[in-house]
Amino acid sequence: MTEGKISRQSVSNISRKALDPGYSPNSYPMTDEYRHSSEVTITLNDLDANTVFLKDDPADHRGLLSWINQKRGTYSWRLDEAGSYGYLVQGSFSSEAIQKAAEEGIIRIKLAVNESSEKSGGLAVYGEQFGRFPVDPTLIIRLK
Image 1 (tube, rainbow, N blue to C red):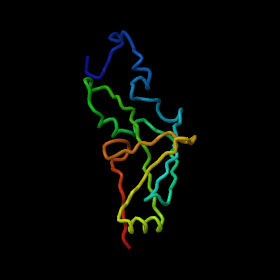
Image 2 (cartoon, rainbow, N blue to C red; image 1 turned 180 degrees about the vertical axis):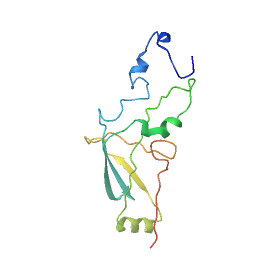
Image 3 (cartoon, helix red, strand yellow; image 1 turned 45 degrees about the vertical axis):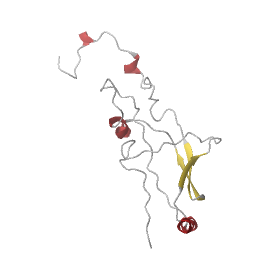
């Protein structure tokens, strides 16, 4: 028998692992059927609240970086990570918030989810090696 191929005669049992995508303790049902949305507030130095709606906590093949960069265990073929990934979120701040940051000499960006809200599904921030997009969180400052 060639590696990667299986004959009918060699199959004696199909375990729950093969049938249940949420079997692994780190996995959860894939996108679409169950939505896990969040409303995230982004502020600059406690001013200029931007609200971003994240419609889901997606996990599927698009989270390839989460799969290939997970910690390897005893079984190299076993993926404990569900392929979770997020959304590439971009935003900007008001001139008032930017002016205050310049006066204080500090840039403090805060991401928050109001836990008492119906849309409090949580927040995961992905970097270069996890999620869908191979970029770390980035702040771009354009001088005039």
